[in-house]
Length: 598
Image (cartoon, rainbow, N blue to C red; front, top):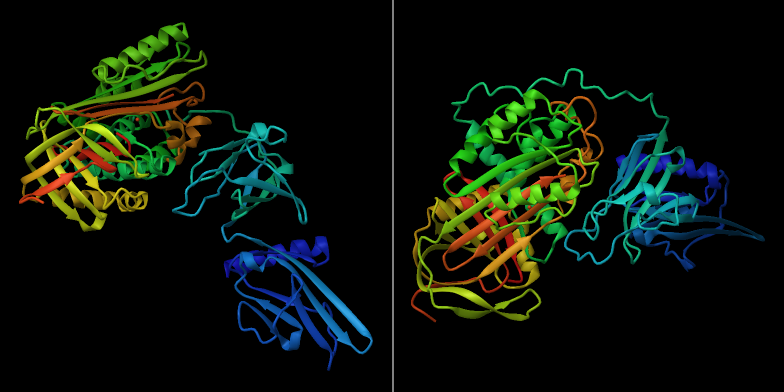
């Protein structure tokens, strides 16, 4: 019924504009085309219909059917194949009458969006699941019936150039952001693939802007609410579930942006920097960050539980936070005190020059990651108001040792190419191994010191489709069930072959922030709990993660900023695999990655 209602509106608008010859229909809806626009009696008249010059069979029972002795043409459902010219020809004695329709079909993903003048709007568009994105989608705006113009963000020849932004280049999500809306932006927009496949249609209406409300932090400057029950048994499980859900959400977003390359991030680092920011967020910004990190709204104990988590992980994982701010700002006393209390981070003033700030920040990063990551930033603009950092460093030794003799083996890449790499090998390694049906993967658990484990998920083959199937099934529930299954799986002697790897990956955190629903951070968020005198705008966000599998064990580091034929079984990860570094003690994921090219 919703599709039919939209269709009625469209038909009414176009009827008035084009005398009923040009019609737009929504894919999946129903159309009934009258041959005549008036009532009359044509007994014995010959009535025929043509579609794009070819006769329509009056006896057809398909999606296009002739009804009422030819006086009506019925199309249901409307599809992309329904688009074109329909002609009704009436012949009687010496008279001929012709009625023509030109039908265009909008994708079923049609949206009607109302916006106010001067605001911004996201125009959604997505490629279908499972396809390889090799080129960005094309955007068009209708200028007249049957006419349109390109409005792509990279086209500097249009008035839209400075107001359009493609949020996720070469991603399945081809949403664009149109800013500083004007009345002339009203109209119909189309998103299509490079080969003309229709992806979405949007109908934008622009209304006059209300009188702007001046920035005010009235009512939002109080400190974060205290955790009323620090001994509650529910607080820790809530954070554990939130961390697992957040981690798998991050992985799903990142694998869309990086479908086949090496991938690595630390969810606990990214969660740490966003939780630290949450301490100063209020109103809608607070709710948006709570949704992003998957914690319940008004979970007042989130910062207390983050502190407990950091303390619990201290033996194997070092977590550190830091805030740098522009000297012209003065963070609120309550935020400063709670930042020290929960995150052991006293806000620090930025220095005078970009060079001094780069050295100060990169030195902090190198120190907190034990020199695993030595550079995160290369310049700090003078306009920077606030930089939040979170760094984690992990070092774990294998509980069962690998053969110390150097060996090499061949790793099979996704495209079938073989690459010779140093390997970790042990003929009789004590580990747990199982086929996890829910994930369609062979999983091995390698125990590490510090009460942690490395899980390696091995798809059935090196085919990219098999890898994607495993990734699609990696929900937070499925992963937590896998962890529980592997904890109860008995260890046994297994012949193990792993590639020695060193992953150093810096995914685009700015895109990730937007996918988490936090675009408002770049546009003026409510951070009144941190600084109340003016709006605070996020300039940049970064995350860098490092992980190495060596003969001794696993070393990993990450930093996030807002401004990451035998008688025994064998397990050979010499083809693309997914890895999961998990804290058994805290029951949370520390690092997640994918190895396609060691």
